[in-house]
Image: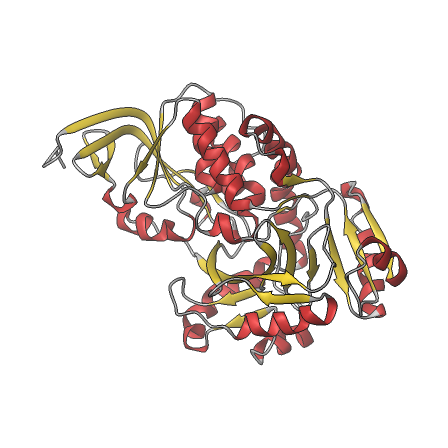
Length: 420
């Protein structure tokens, strides 16, 4: 494709498609290594999945979110009445091949390998965010008190304590809290048998603002941000180009970091990845009386997180397996809210309608990070599932090191697009 109706062509080294947390961090790390970068998004930076998450930088998630192998748990999910996992019945035939692969990778031997593959990124998660927080000027949005996992029954709490002890090799810091200790730490919580307070993670009271601040840092240090449609991407004469109105941005390399929308683009160039979508919802609430939450709290069984945010208490739901753009289904949020109100005095909902987003997920629980094998200068960075906000800066560093010929801080082979 030539210049067509464009009036001007502007050149750079790299075009990064997608201004979510992953794309912004890829752009920042490439720029810090001397590359001229254009960051492209159709909307504001951090306005999609990077905005709507629970704000956890999950250093403690050393074991990936695998499919349960307990048949009683799976039977409960199959009824489609669990608030932790829901699925669109109409999509089940299409989902079954993906679920079968997810099931296989969740086996003990396979999961152990996935955990070892992911560990260098998880271990770097807080450190790589810390490297950006100061320059971005957002210390007030970041908190180092970890988060708390809640257990309504004594049996579940004791099992969780044993599981936490089993992670001793990872050097994680945590407190096992009985009912009394939990009440002392979080007086607003009630009707719980105990909790695990994970100390290593960092949290944010406004993850969307964090992503926007990283994007401002990119712009303030010489980066170019444009509003344009990633689907205008084309290749001509060894260069990639994006149309911004009558302006054409050209570069020798391009990074696809479009999160759940990455499939809209890579399929146009002949690539096929087994991506599925774990959708999630959130709603903000006020608080009754003078109670407060000092850290995010999670009920893993019910699948929700209550997180203190600048907009109020954010209730995030578990997983909804559905098409990315399928209509909103409020049932999961309503059920999670009903359970959450048993533990914490939520007030009225503060949002007119719930937020809905999609986590792009691969069946082997690892993102796609690396060079495309059919097109020169094409790179991928997507599929981070539950850990996009956690791993944005670490992914940005890893891909930038690969693209600039530096020694990668982590082995990139497990994340190669060629594995599918």
